[in-house]
Length: 218
Image 1: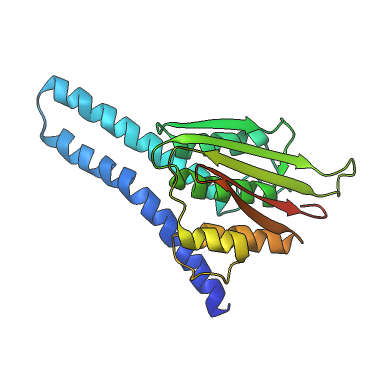
Image 2: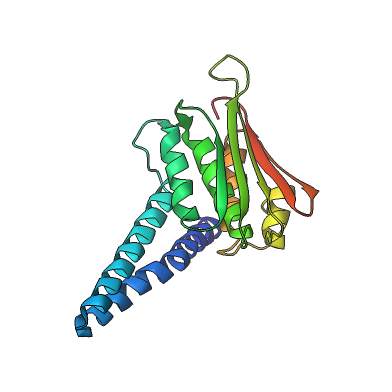
């Protein structure tokens, strides 16, 4: 295995661990508090925090299993609702409105990986909330006609990392690969493997459009 592939895997693992550290750590702290707490009201509050931390951890694991791994079974397609549920899981209780514009037909795994990784990057950018629109459609009637993916965000303020934006707009070599930019690199890699292209357009300071076109089976 080349050094680049090892580094890529390491960066994705670092990103996963970084995102899981907070809810798993909160779960461990809650157990410690529960062991020493005698007040019934405080114990009930501890249980609520434990439940919330466990739910957040499970949602993140489900998301990363689809976004980085090979979840969805051994077939080529993933249920659309599974992808939607994964995005809802990482949004959690943040003030982000998800506008899901994809039907019920199963989606090819490469398209799901691109949708989820772009969603991860855009949700991170909406630090003060906003709206995330997610769309995906086949090109032409032929099942091998390709797939077009589009994600659009609107917010009063958004903070998309500059290196992430360069990688999405110009290619994976445009900025250094880090745990922060690894999802953007993965988007470009999946698109390239499927004879596709990635596009990014800043419509206004409060609006951003990013997507991909996958040719062939996508």
